[in-house]
Length: 242
Ligand SMILES: NC(=O)c1ccc[n+]([C@@H]2O[C@H](COP(=O)([O-])OP(=O)(O)OC[C@H]3O[C@@H](n4cnc5c(N)ncnc54)[C@H](OP(=O)(O)O)[C@@H]3O)[C@@H](O)[C@H]2O)c1
Image (tube, rainbow, N blue to C red):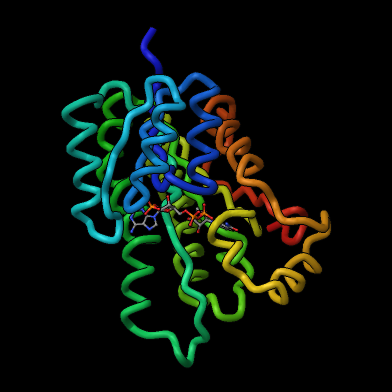
């Protein structure tokens, strides 16, 4: 039997990389999307049986079109899942954040989560089966000083999850968000020690999370959660429960 295909955006590093690994171990054929980190993406592809690479800059709509064209040509009938994970943060107080920064982060984190889902939805609708998991953030629900732009994109993603779940439910397409708290990846290693100490003080479990702890929840949503849709699942060591 052919393996079900799941595309994971931003799978070259961090959380996306762990999601790709976990899904491959669970038996899925994984599409490893990356943008700039070609070497790490190729290394992962060598590690994961049957996986394939997809390069696209998701700050541009053309990047999502590249993924759509590939799916249409190579694997439309086998596409089962999409994990919208690619994203980045901009840490800048409101008074100094720029319109350029606004456009850049909205385009990558938010517009392409919507646009890629919209484009790939036709394959799920045709099969009457699909799973979409959007990686948002606790910051989308709580806000965070210096992260106004990032937080808006993540709040937008969670709202999109809810509407997409409603629109797609009759096609057996389940859409959920996983909202990580603070997870050890490149995104958080850049934080200063003083900020890390402050963050740790807000986490009841007393530590940052591991990317694999997010990946396990994505795997659950992909393979066994048949009655969860439109939900935002918080995975954050107890700092916020929704
Ligand atoms: N780490 C945390 O504490 C945390 C907490 C909450 C939510 N999240 C969310 O989890 C997701 C992954 O974060 P992470 O910590 O794993 O970050 P990361 O290690 O910095 O990895 C980010 C990934 O996104 C991709 N990406 C960034 N800009 C892109 C663009 N313009 N086009 C295509 N791909 C792009 C990168 O690809 P290339 O390197 O190949 O360019 C990379 O694979 C993000 O959506 C982030 O907001 C993270």
